[in-house]
Length: 138
Ligand SMILES: [Zn+2]
Image (cartoon, rainbow, N blue to C red; front, side, top):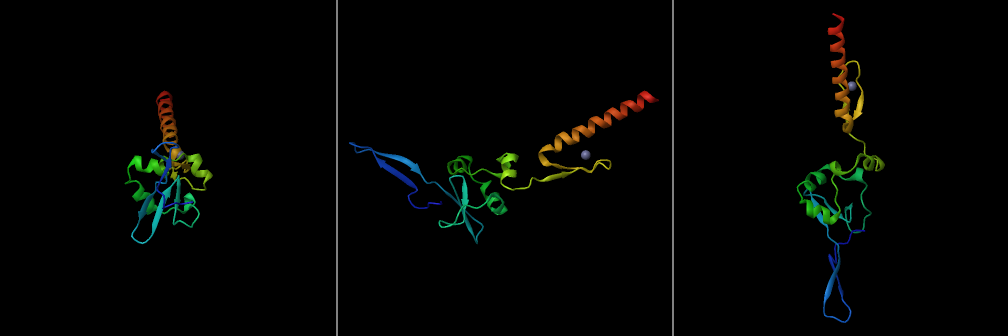
């Protein structure tokens, strides 16, 4: 639940006059000029009375603005950018990973972006192997 009030919670230490900061309901508010979204406790909310948004429901403009926030500020509210999330985590949350469409005519595979490097390297290796074979056959 998003809490915009009591952004700082203090507790009086018994038998002293000291107060201790027990928790901070830090939040980040980002707006595209029409709509505001709030990040708090690792969740993104559209308002105080709404449940947290699903990862796939968070709009791109929010992430674009979030990328401009300081790392410390994002850490304090537990805001993790999509590119910082593990792919397994994204899949669990129903977010489709971007695909790399292999242009090799013999292949034309659709591979997850995270495997693009390995995939291209395999083609490169295969081409080298074939080139070598050709030389040997001459
Ligand atoms: Zn390929």
